[in-house]
Structure formats: structure tokens, C-alpha cells
Length: 199
Image 1 (cartoon, rainbow, N blue to C red):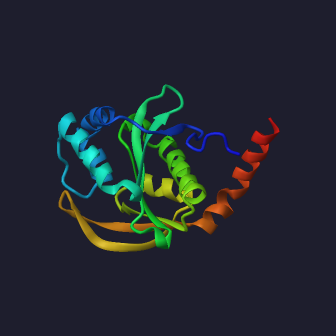
Image 2: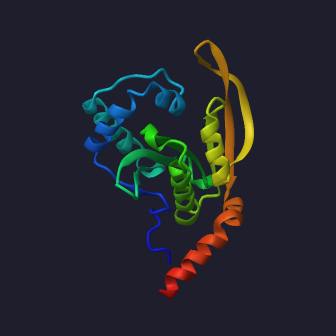
Image 3: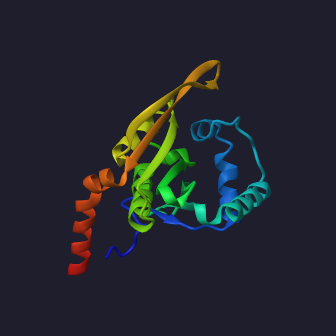
């Protein structure tokens, strides 16, 4: 058995109190580049209290369809971002994933890729899902490369969907199937299981 399904090579996935998350997001949201990479809505500045209330309401409304985790580094235990799965309906075994690394000190260093690999393992091994989908903005090549490393395939493009600083950008649609994930990672997780069992 894998001892800790929430622990990767660089990060671990955690649950956090709304107050902790509110404080983190109130800092991350001041970085308008982070907001433009994470969301297609105009950036807003919210207080810790308002973020906390939003998180509590959102979690209550979604309950069994949304799985939200927060990302902490293994070294230093810093809270650096979030990752979540949203399952529109269980019958199809399909989920959407969203991820954000709020602290730009950790951008481009593999933390997001490691967190994505963890959430995919959770999706396919624990929730027994068949596919995971995401969308990403065409002006975010760093995220696109990270998703490709995690095993996502390009599946489509919505052209001229976003307006950013007077220019139009596209939505890229990407997805990964359970069979693709198993082909890429199944053997490595089997090996990890054998090593753990031998200890």
C-alpha cells in the first residue's frame, strides 16, 4: 500500500481552516498576474472575512461533488496554492480540475506539476474516475507545459474567448484518461508499492 496518497516529491495536499485560506488568498489576490492566470474574471480584492465566508458557503453547496485540497511544500511547510476536482455527475466518471500556485516564488519549479500528479492519483485510484479535464489560457505556456508533463493531452481550442489588455486569447481544452494515466504512472506506483511493502 502507498502510505500517504497526499504526499508527493515536493508537496503534500492538506485541508486548511477557512481563516488560514482567507489570509493566504488575500495576499495572493494582490498579485494581478496570478489572478489573470487563474481566472477569466476581472481581478478583485477581497477581505479575509469575505474570502472565508465564500469558502465556507462554496464547500457547503458542493459537498459530494467537489474535492478541494491545499498545497504545502514538504520543505518549510509553506502554504503555496490549491488544487480541486469538480465532478458534475458521478455516473460518467468525469471531473474537471483546477489548480493555482499563489506564491510566485514557487512558479516554474515543479511544485504545480507535483500537486497535479497527486490529484490525478487521487482521481483515478481513490475516486475511480475515467477522465479528468481542464481548461487553460493560451497566454499561460508555463501551465500548459506543466499539464503536458502530468500527462494531459490537447483536445480543443475555443478561439478569441478572452480579452486581456486589448488582445484576444484562446481557451485550450485538455484532458487525461484513466488508461493514459495508468500507462504513464501505473508501473511507477506499483514499484512504490513494492518498495513500501518490502520495508
